[in-house]
Amino acid sequence: MIEEIQIRDLGVIESATIELDRGLTVITGETGAGKTMVLTGLGLLLGGKADPGSIRPGAEIASVEGRFAPPQDHTALSVAADAGAMLDDGVLLVVRTLAPTRSRAHLGGRSVPQGLLAELGHELVTVHGQSEQIRLRSPALQRQALDVFAGPEHAQNLALYGRLHQQRQDAQRALERWDADSQAREVELDRLQRALERIDALEPRAGEDAELRAEAERLGNVEDLRAAAEHAHRALGGAEDPDAPEGALALVDHARRSLAAAADHDETLADWSGRLDTVSYQLSDVLTEIGSYVTGLEADPERLDQVHTRRSALTEAARTYTDGGELVELLAFAEDARARVAALTAPGAGRDALDTELQQLESDERDAAASVTQGRRHAARLLAEAVDAELAGLAMSGAHLSVALHERSALGPWGAEDVEFSLTPHPGAPARPLAKGASGGELSRVMLALEVAMARQQASTPGGTLPAFVFDEVDAGVGGQAAVEVGRRLAELARHTQVIVVTHLAQVAAFADRHLVVMKTSGAHQGAVTNSDIRRVEGPDREAELARMLSGDPLSETALRHAAELLERPVVGR
Image (cartoon, rainbow, N blue to C red; front, side, top):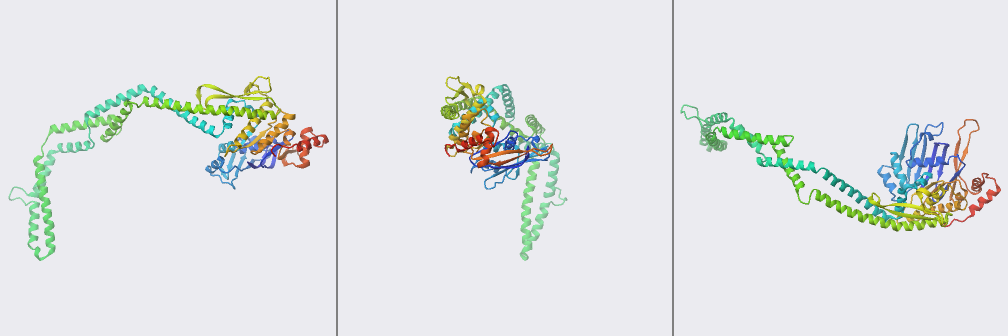
């Protein structure tokens, strides 16, 4: 529900506060008084496009503030919370300001994009103006109206169908890409298989490159290695020449024996002797290993050539198939290539898998479309009956709304059929599609009949919530008894939700729970800016406004009597 709208410096309105309530509120006033600015202000709060030209002459900025009170757990509240908006006892505070070069939007004290207000507005308020009546000619809008009337279970079926339709399209495109890329995959498969043949012929092992590098270093430096090992052997074990100095092993053994001889007199010497005994064993082992190393160290040019050849083959393959040219990368490439080849050649994979998935999705999509069609057929009959009953009350007795489902040649995003509304305005007249044959007055009444019918349907649905409705001259093109029935139907709709109506017809305004009048005043001197104010009228003031609407003269006694009669007329359901 819209609780309040405050407008400052917008068009002819310098400052106005519009207090609203549940039920039916009508806004009236002379042509040019500023009723349009009220709707313009509301449109700005609902995320409408800002027009700097609507700023009041002489003012730097215009602003509109609104208080919206959605029901608990309403979608708009979660959207606002996600945007960081603060709530005032469950009320959304919306502010829109206009400057010559920019406009700004605030929600709950937070600056937000204009698009977010439009998203909230779509959930909170439904605005019907002359453009919306024209849009009713659109088959898409007719289909949407039927789907809304069909109820929440149908909405779930429609959402499921939409997901399946998208998934089926995605699967179909994937299959088409597969077929289009078949030649490229053949080239890829041949390249991978040739690469694996070459790699498998090499039989590379993890760590083999490090082993070959070490072996190449050893075989390529045999003489240096032999000289170093022999020198170390002499240093540890001593030379064969008796005049040469003793080796390290003999000296350590001599020191150990010297300490052992006196170890009985001091434990410290015994400890040193034991430690040197360990050193002696270790040096002896090293001496033996060096001797074996020198004995087995031989130059092997043939093996060195084999190592170089092997390293070159591994490096060339790694550089061919990887960026870094390392053996570890070559092994990873081979693993990935085997997996890709398996995917391209495995039975039941590739195109077979895509085709199987597509067939299953096509079947699921057809089943979902059938459920949507069934729901629409049932809803079409009920909607036609409900609208016919409303049209009879809107001075179109005998009029009939036909809701036809035309099967499509192929499933579309919204199902297996297009929806078309046709109107038979009176018995014996041919049925004409709303898109072609309905007049403005007929469209106004059909739209109102649809809204009342859908409001009743949603109000009877557990958990169903209705937006607030704003009608801009929904009574255009009607008069007399039809105007009275339009007012009656608006009052009926207002039993279920808030309804705000801008009207020129006293017959409609008389049904209101709250009557607001936009009044225009002009400055006394030439060039003064026109100003409009909005106030609520009751009692004699309301009768005078209705008299003005009826005759143009708020003091006409005949018009005043007629106005009083209109106000005395009972409203069904009150």
